[in-house]
Image (cartoon, rainbow, N blue to C red; front, side):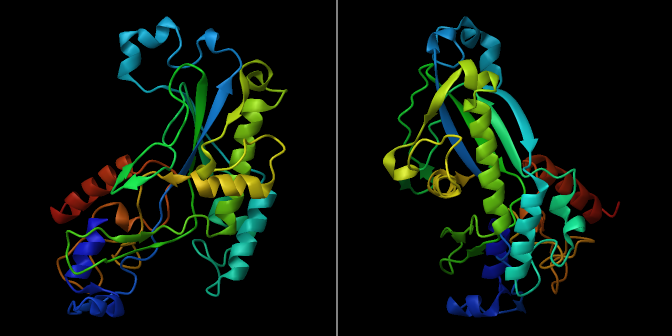
Length: 319
């Protein structure tokens, strides 16, 4: 998120915000620092019926001691899914109806043509982890998260890691002061839209059913149930009978960011999509994830590599 700070501290940004810190305004660019998006994630830890079977790290299973195991990731599989399209369509309508500008990303589209309703779109990514994951919100010291999980990797738990792929909620990043060394004020505004709340309710319900329902392999003989986080981070254990309110409360209490910030210098608003030049400024480009205008359903590393290669070709005159 450094580009937006460089722009603002150089006098390119919302004039009222710059004047608040005594920064001379060279270009009034109200969209700098707006439209911030990030992938939200949630970890659920699942208690095994029989830890002696060696399904998880920390057990006596010799496979976890093999040298090649340590060269990879302790993840079994990754899948991307969505829920019933009718529920998603209703959430899209609710957001469009509540937005005075006609909706957010994809604004004004009919249900059938809205980008989120295309059959190629997925709203949730789920990873199954061979060990419990302690990365739930606890006390924070600067940028360091202090784990609050009571589940050590002792072979008794596996975990599901869920990531919201297509968030439509948008937040802001603002200056804290006129000093570039000071960290920004970030308001990700998670779960602000009906679409995002629907995606998380349906996503969590699907994972809970996979892990605990009697008609699944995991539910019949592998998983005993969910072990919830401490009292300050999420409420009772989730089951197939959990209500919408209980699921949403857990997501809000125990969810956290993935460090995939996007959109605060978005193409079409702050930079020209044709050449990534900052609108109203000669010879200045922004080339990082902050120019991505709509949250991409993927990890941001590879797309930013591609963006940088394209920008390098533009600057070198080859594109």
